Length: 307
Ligand code: GLU
Image 1 (tube, rainbow, N blue to C red):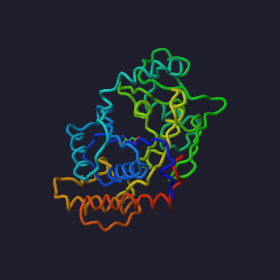
Image 2: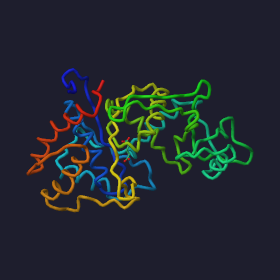
Image 3: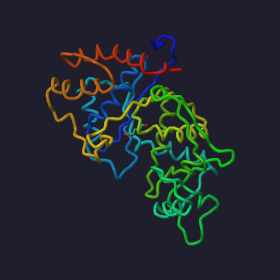
Image 4: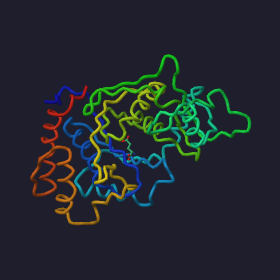
């Protein structure tokens, strides 16, 4: 059993990017973070991660919020929008000072340098540090990168409450990473760390596709002097091709204005089943009454307790 009573003040959050309406995959992440906050008598915040101006879809934020409400998931406090918090990211950039440098490399150049170096097949490009000591003549600054220590290697590890012990050598496997993109938008890694810190988030529950972002976030928390939250990454829902459900892979919105009963049977119950909760509810209110103890049961069998 997780010990709820002894737990420190818990603040969780759901942080959707408004790239489209919620689908089953994003509902799973929302449901897990909501239930974890409820089980720990914590607060549950909603933050719209709309820093990527190119991917935002007009009206998607309101659609997501309306769907959460229709599903009976009430958040605490005011919703925040990252696009309204850029002063915080500017301040973090100033705080990072000399750890940040301008980079003039295109993705193509980074990919080419990886091939030259014998190119390990990596999912993401490893930055070889080309502009670390200044831009080569003729290059113009594009992105801003954060220096990752070279010696000793910057290894960051954590105990994920679901996935177990995770460790990554940022020096070898990531390299200096982007905190402001070539198009001028703030990178997800910086914005998420600054906001989790500013909002005193203690517990992050999200999809396992973000497991490999976590070591970068731990490093950023350290250099910004922010506390490390506890993490729980739930498995991601995939389609029949094994791809993570997302707008790009054609995931369908579940909330198309259907009646609550349909939301229950077509969204809430399948999301709960995916998370290992066997619930036979007759209404949305009945669903949440059963889901809170059911999540406790999942935690007891799957997860390490929160610190
Ligand atoms: N905005 C991210 C997404 O929608 C989630 C970020 C997070 O939970 O840290 O995938």
